[in-house]
Length: 453
Image (cartoon, rainbow, N blue to C red):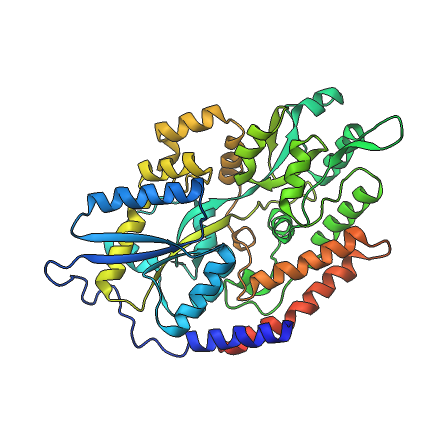
């Protein structure tokens, strides 16, 4: 099945990169025929709920202000994975939407497809000031071009049970900053009942490859070669670096010593354990903040994503998704899609998006919007994420790795993490090196398909 998946991927990419005869640059035929209503189909990955409701509300607001000129139609295309698979198929078939939301893992493929118009072209033509947070812009900027517009973005932070800290004699205003500090605190936070059963573990987090990627960025080391795939297409995964071996050695020892609960791969398991008070410290996306506060009977504290050592200078990379304008449409339709993208980025609309969904206010100006400021005043824990965002430096390590097969690479890393945390005699270095070896054929097949040597 793995080999078949690689072959199919190569077919998708080869078809996608086989030509661009239907595309038009933004400078061609930007004016629609007289009296024509320009229609923009917008694929997104938000199922029914707060995120989809907020999306639909913003679309309606835009359409109301562009009556008779532009109409955006939002279409739920399935989960992030489903939407990504669907855009691959539509690229091959030549029936793409004008605008599509794609998660961060799809960045390299979207660029290599040669079926997108980088938003940088519109930014340059309009002399438009994006006002994006530098770290946010850093992920979606390759070769000095902003390829897609960041929209629903987040990053991981540390969560902790403030009440448990107080009960253990720890300062509840001072979360741990390093792995060593987590261990020291976990020794005081871990509790057992009269029968010797652990009722509260000091630490616990999902076996999630994204966290491993974040530990690399936090240590200011690259997760894949060629500048994290940003100088040119990456040809090798680097998840067996000494820094990440150290992280997994630490994590394995925490579990072995009974200080950490292994909650498995599903992120929901770790989230539930934290809210129930089973684990006192966890790692999660900022997207978990609302649920953590409303679903916990204790005071929730937040801190920066931990460092594997005290001397490193990096910071976590952003996650989430961005908006891509497809090039195989008339230029006036691409321009209409761009008008909608700009609309979403206004301070008022970004603040609305932030408060309704919990995603970052991606622009600097939107962070001072009164609505957003009031939202964060009622949730001061969210300011931790913004402070972390403002303090880290922008470089290729904190930009994050982009691979054409990044989703598969993350899965291989999770396979290795699971082996390390559940196996008795599994060496971290060997397991992580195994992930590097396992993903190599997929990387090679992808690069061959897009003409990278």
